[in-house]
Image (cartoon, rainbow, N blue to C red; front, side, top):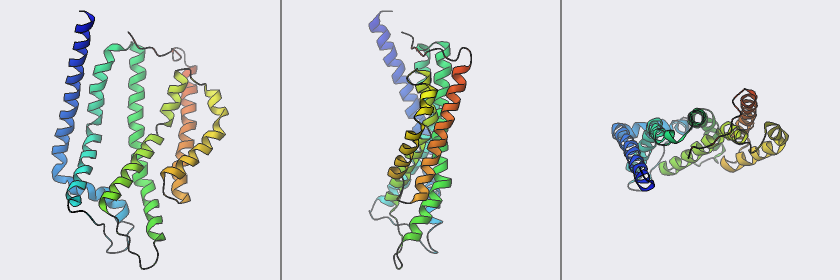
Length: 248
């Protein structure tokens, strides 16, 4: 098989994997469509629980009450279908990797996905109650907190992404050490700068209260330390310090 035929075969394989991933996403979305409003109610529960008795959310646009729950259903469908979609991506790239590279890539992708879900869960169950409790308590007397459902969804998505990315710190640390870009000793040396950076990130991506900022900065610091420990442990094991190279 010449180079052109090989390239076309790769394009056909890529198209097939993309089609499988898109079909899986659509099927899950169709399955969740009847429960779109229930999914939004679940997503809004942390805020609704902090509103005064009789408090509610509002929809300021004509179509918002219809499209926002659909967006939530699509987001949920993407998260549910994500393992299968990543599996399709894995089936496409795996033939170009050596055996030890397959183990590393699989472990990194699995750990990254699990940590992203953990970050979202941490934001939903731990951060949102604190943040929304602060926001509702800080409202001036006589002011009713009635958040628009579309703006609430945007806020929640931003927080999910921020915490999901923040929880990738151990994976990033391990990759940097694995690629010999930096050593575990150097990472320990720059620890004070990382702590300062964590609090800066916490101040940028969370509402302006100390508690929510700490709830992002502290996990960042702890995950950074966990990444150093894991990276140091792996590089001490025989055979684990083999450099990563992609097969040509």
